[in-house]
Length: 286
Image (cartoon, rainbow, N blue to C red; front, side, top):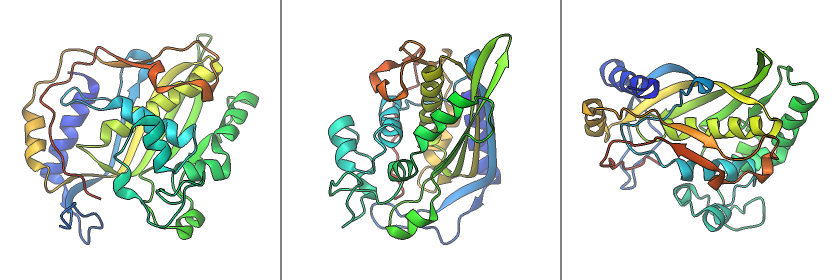
């Protein structure tokens, strides 16, 4: 069993056995029913990517390519346009969060509001992070924050779940390793947990490649980790499943020094990934 599978099962058991019920829940299912959940506060995991530990479960298939494309939409395109997400990447799952009457930051009509890529572009975050790391890799100010109260007041839209990322470097035996820390305010354990984690591992890998560094450790903190009340059967099924004996890892097939903005989704390869099937069905809370 991989480290990710062990952590996944442990978190599921903890939520089911020790979790408390949400009150005055904001999300709803597509039929309008309130989406309550059981949750725990303060979940943390550490993965050493340099030793082959990746935060992806083998207990069910994870759509990693779509996840990476969404990350590129946010940090390369720096866009909040649903048209860009669909036309360029063929990713559609953000459609349920479209904000009516709010144009995207590139002039398109379909938008998720002033969120995610719009905030990245507004503050020129990626250019600043790359500049800081180039000028002084050991600085302790490499922070991406998508939590922008001013932007939230401008338009409606889903507030960012994965809202903060920090990067640090370490030199070990002559090699420079890039570490990353992802903080989420909220996470749907069964649906989004490994999607979000692997997205930001991919981002970490892109920045490391930009400078020709090694990927190091990935730290993952979630404030509210939950399972929705229509997912308990799927949770029990995941606990019953025997994980794959493979050890999956993500590979970025570009030369060291490749510019951050030149990396594409097809440059990533998920190796030795043989998840347990069939896929489970989840009705998303919106």
